[in-house]
Length: 206
Length: 206
DNA sequence: AATTATTTGTGAAAAGTTACACGAATCACT
DNA sequence: AGTGATTCGTGTAACTTTTCACAAATAATT
Ligand SMILES: NC(=O)c1ccc[n+]([C@@H]2O[C@H](COP(=O)([O-])OP(=O)(O)OC[C@H]3O[C@@H](n4cnc5c(N)ncnc54)[C@H](O)[C@@H]3O)[C@@H](O)[C@H]2O)c1
Ligand SMILES: NC(=O)c1ccc[n+]([C@@H]2O[C@H](COP(=O)([O-])OP(=O)(O)OC[C@H]3O[C@@H](n4cnc5c(N)ncnc54)[C@H](O)[C@@H]3O)[C@@H](O)[C@H]2O)c1
Image (cartoon, rainbow over all chains, first blue to last red; front, top):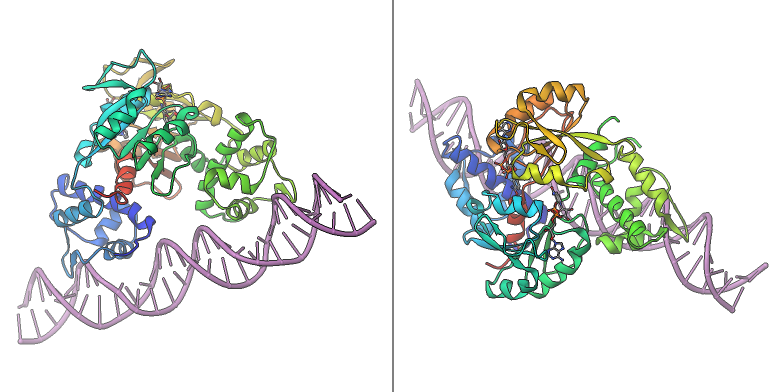
């Protein structure tokens, strides 16, 4: 288990998501690499190879016990604890994220929200009171928060990122349409719908 | 220009985004693969190789004329026309997307919004009136819409996808946390913040 | 005009990823 | 107990992607 390729790590949450679906929606207790692959459009060999980086979780002839594999994936991905998350930006997107009920069941809880607009500060957002951005560092350190979701305009994103990194944040999910510079021990993940749409229009006939 | 790897296509929108930034924010007229790579954390060789799939856009000794390269990338990605987009789901996320002003300047316009909740239908959403989901197919065909953004709960996503495909949609940006099955001529792009967060927690010490 | 510095585009090498295919384990059924 | 079907884990081959490194073009400087 020395160094697993990042591309493999990126597929594990998708396996986990589908396994949860199989258990909850389809009421199955076991599955196979073939079935999982079919449902996800991934080859069965790839699924087996990916999992083999971490151990032997299946049984010949039977496949995988879903709940057991879910538990293993949750351990591999460090999801046995619940991660507190800071949300920066209480605009349209911040509102959607703050109300999103899909975080908690999958290991994350938005614990604090920050904004710099006096009209937003103090606002109650799905049970969370929006805090002043000035208090961001102290609150993040007090709560020992390691993960932030960045939902402010692009022109403030790098500046806020620098402050998050100084405050000890190690993973940032960035919705601002801009590349962020961070030290090598900080993870950044990007979400820009326009980038995704533009990739698809390449394949469309205009 | 026979078949360019999809992974290359995926980087072009990011180049385009950064070039626009260089032109508008930094007021530069030229740049180099080295500078662009520095700003994006990508090697200069990769940028040159990527662009070389489509032609020779730079000049030795000088680099790239930014506006010219932007124009070329827009043509390659089929962004010389404005793409009308259908938004399905007028919940929290649908509201954020309908109000997002970042689509228009980069080639996309949300042209219609659909929901099945009688309380949502008829609502005015940033100038757009929410339509009944029953009218989805006819409106999409009438407006010749090829791109949809899916922002409904997971349990309806596949069913709506099937309807979108039948109506002629060829590209779907899916926010529901579920894999979609589509014919091979339909593009799907996924956006699940939890998948992204879970990929990052692998690298965090719990 | 000659020299030096910069930068592109690209063939070839290196590194990374996926697919194949098969032995071994397990199960279902006779 | 034996037979046939299923499925895993994995070594190897095939394929894809990235990096290297250099000739050629251009620009800046002497
Ligand atoms: N709305 C969407 O659907 C959508 C989709 C994808 C990406 N995005 C991106 O997400 C970000 C937010 O989008 P939005 O639509 O919510 O915008 P918005 O303008 O509604 O919200 C931005 C919020 O950030 C706050 N803010 C600005 N500067 C700040 C600072 N220095 N410190 C703290 N807070 C600050 C503002 O007060 C505002 O509340 C933008 O970068 C946008 O490009 C939005
Ligand atoms: N809120 C977020 O920040 C967020 C983030 C990422 C992903 N998502 C995903 O995006 C989707 C929407 O999230 P949301 O927070 O806006 O949820 P929401 O419940 O606020 O909105 C969903 C909307 O879809 C409508 N809808 C339901 N069934 C429909 C049908 N058959 N036809 C048409 N419309 C239908 C509902 O009436 C509702 O208006 C979900 O799949 C969610 O998991 C949400």
